[in-house]
Length: 247
Image 1 (cartoon, rainbow, N blue to C red):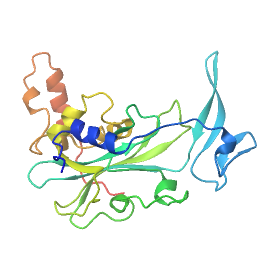
Image 2: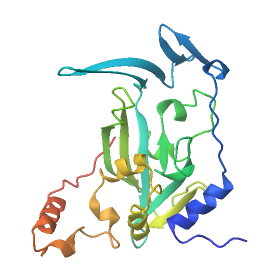
Image 3: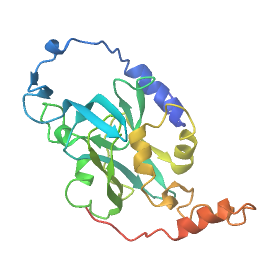
Image 4: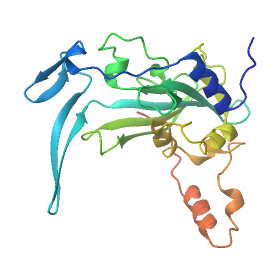
């Protein structure tokens, strides 16, 4: 039996070996359910997303390019717990286009069409933590609308959320979900192609104490930073409004 990985990198290596991926380009006519109508490439359900042509002008500069039009709001959410110290539920997310195939995604990373299973996919694990009421004994620490990548998506927004659950809350019994301590998550953020962009977009919206080792205030050791940058970070962290937010 393989040893349980202790670092995010080791875990990702195992997941990449377990889920090898090969990406092959296909002609559009070979994609079932997708149609070219009125100069737009779209799914015959009218959901999921479409590809449109966009013209934008900035002063005298005109840019024309294809963009993904997906007006529905997706969910990017992390589940966290604090049995003794902050822990994060990471998901090994295999996606075409990822460098190395698999990277760390949020606990839930799903478009509305995904979790409503418009395209006939499997149920989205943990979606109940973010759609509907907060889990019993849990708490919503952050929940806000944030824009998707503006150079590829046309006016696209996601709900970026952080939900705390009790330490014994049921989570997916699958290798692609793992709890990791805050210290290991911090370390993984410095590794290229480990933490995906969706995860990072959620992480900048949460209370900073969830990324500390003991759940106390962040940047404490920087209070006396000689050039005042540390002091500014400390002051900013202390002024954060940490009131509970409900979706």
